[in-house]
Image (cartoon, rainbow, N blue to C red; front, side):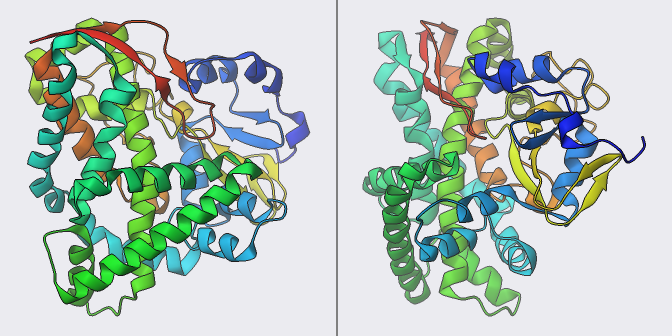
Length: 403
């Protein structure tokens, strides 16, 4: 491919997107089929697994959300700096250092001790609705679970769940790019910073069986000097980034199964498939269906000219449907064997640090729900949120029978 393709040469999907409704992972593959690159407004959309990997691993690409937040009109520069220093938006040496600090404390074995508590929470939620035979799964299961789990992981009372839910929702809303969300997000940031700073001080004085203690211990074992700001950055990123994505991904999982009752009954018969089912749900229908990047310098991507500042969208939902990597990519199969990792949790240094926690939560939720509920089916219209890089059901009416 010669180096002659420009953004204006690309097929635009603007009109088709404006007419599309429902989850992006249903209509995006249709709109982009046959195109390696397409244009969505001012952005280049990458549709293949290989190109998406490049944009997530090549340091010439920066964080697109980081650039967008800085460009918001009339925004407090202190807030811009605070958000840019979060692990979700941080770049360069500090991003690498924070990940290096976080990873030892976020290994799978560290979350095994929380799995019984996760299952207990799901059992409690099922108890409330099992005899009714129907519910809005978003309200009954998906919203309460990740917030309750965060309380367990941080070692704080579950009574704090409402506080975490409020600040996570306000902070996540900012990623939509809507300037009207800034004021609430600023207030939420101040609240969560103050809360976590106090909690870190308490854990330094009185260690517990929780993630903050693990982070402090991991840093000490590594001989690193860890500041309260570093720990606060990791914890707040986990709360803000993990709460919304996990509740949406669980809702998407239940929607997928409700549309495919044979797969739900297969899971009920074979609970050992739960880990594979989690991976298939995140591959087939990732809630974080797109990641925003930006060209930090003039470059070329296999013939496509990307001038400095060009917005680039890494479409993970399309990378996960690349038939050269995933055979029969449009088929939802909880027994799928993965030869290559999907991109539902990102890639490399841009992979989600909370993916271990998310996998554990989704796994325990599907284990309990499939054991206790049979005949899972949709019980009305599913209402979907706007596709703002993260998407999921706003309401998900289900019917079922207690097993």
